[in-house]
Image 1 (cartoon, rainbow, N blue to C red):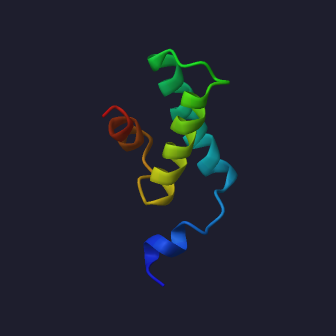
Image 2: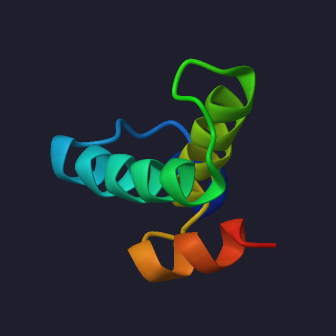
Length: 67
């Protein structure tokens, strides 16, 4: 199994989750998105997917999400 496929099956650890949540909250605030919205859900799912695909630096996540 290749590394990308196996990384998608790994559990996100609490420290990792905290990093993702911090980026999520910053992006939600910057974009003026309601926390309880479908747009916020989609943003969170995309962040998690990017993190699991190997983009694990907070600044890199923000940069990718700005496009």
